[in-house]
Image (tube, rainbow over all chains, first blue to last red; front, side):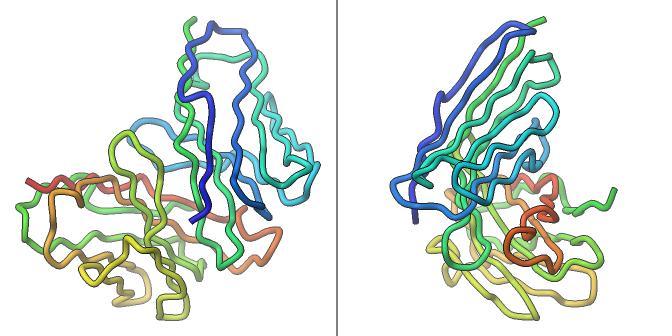
Length: 111
Length: 118
């Protein structure tokens, strides 16, 4: 399947700092999604992006669908301890609605 | 808020044994999925199911795997003869009938079943 490269692999930051993570693909995606996974839980959708260049916010989270359709970033502003978790990008391949996930960015926030 | 419910939360089985993982999707959803996540790795698509048949499956979903919707509420994943490498978290997901741009907004994952094959 199409490969998604997500970076960084992990981040260790202080409360109040801003966070940025990104995802790149070797080929074009028509949809970019960002999920958060907490221990013992399934992924929860944070932001969905459907158009190249689209910039979407959800509270302190902002994500953009790259113009080339091969990348996306997620920013978290003014991080708080409950932001801790693993953040996954996911793309919608051309066939069906199966999701192709990145390897995740593990975020740790210290008070 | 509606949830996707998975049972059991943990399952330990011996290599070669059959296991059935159970899911109760959100009641008015029409599309059902199984994903797995090997410890420390990414979430991987296994299979999608719609209108009582498989609509898409990945290379991982070989003949050892099968899915079934035995009644109006349950959706199961069966692994016939488990291998050590089947140890993973298995997530069920469901979504409603939204198409295209809206298709992912109702895409809900369960909390997963942790399968350990020994």
